[in-house]
Image (cartoon, rainbow, N blue to C red; front, side):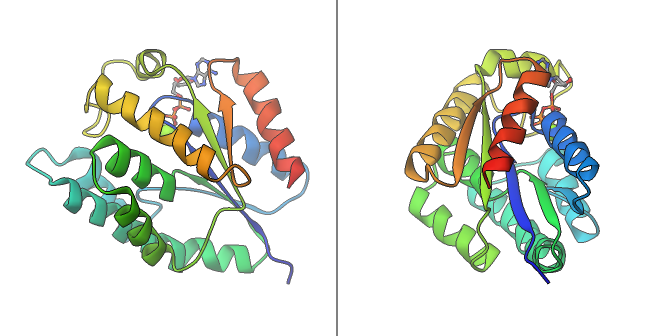
Length: 202
Ligand SMILES: Nc1ncnc2c1ncn2[C@@H]1O[C@H](COP(=O)(O)OP(=O)(O)OP(=O)(O)O)[C@@H](O)[C@H]1O
Ligand SMILES: [Mg+2]
């Protein structure tokens, strides 16, 4: 069985990840590829319970606890869903993955970057995306797209999100072969075309 592909979609809240991942999924299906559209946190099962805590818990959550909850979800997701699918030749499209933890808990919350990288590596047990697309946009614009109903992560404030955005740009500079930045202020259609181009290059 030919190995599938693993493509992750990253960027700050409201940048357009979910919109674009659905369009790419539709495109790949039209080209007769077998795809799996999934997300973090909380793809299904246990993950959905962790997602509920991560996005809606109203009490205090320490940055390290938050990181471990995301990592616990990721370990389960990789072992039970992502790896088996890739091994079966599926094109796995994942809405957020390791770079979110690096950008949000590392650059955003200020936890040690190398430590987060190490914890990420333990959680994914060696799996690396073949391609990661980071949707980059001015934070005020992306947050205005989401509107007023924000979850726990989305309520973290503009300075936090500016650090997250700068974090993603750093990640892309460090791994230019894997991580590609796309201007997310463009129209949905133009962004989709760029995404398809990047996937074709694979
Ligand atoms: N290029 C675009 N131009 C204008 N509006 C857009 C664009 N892309 C997405 N949107 C709109 O912005 C909102 C947020 O988009 P989307 O849910 O895809 O972002 P997201 O990155 O998945 O957000 P989150 O991190 O909160 O899951 C949606 O209402 C969507 O229709
Ligand atoms: Mg989304």
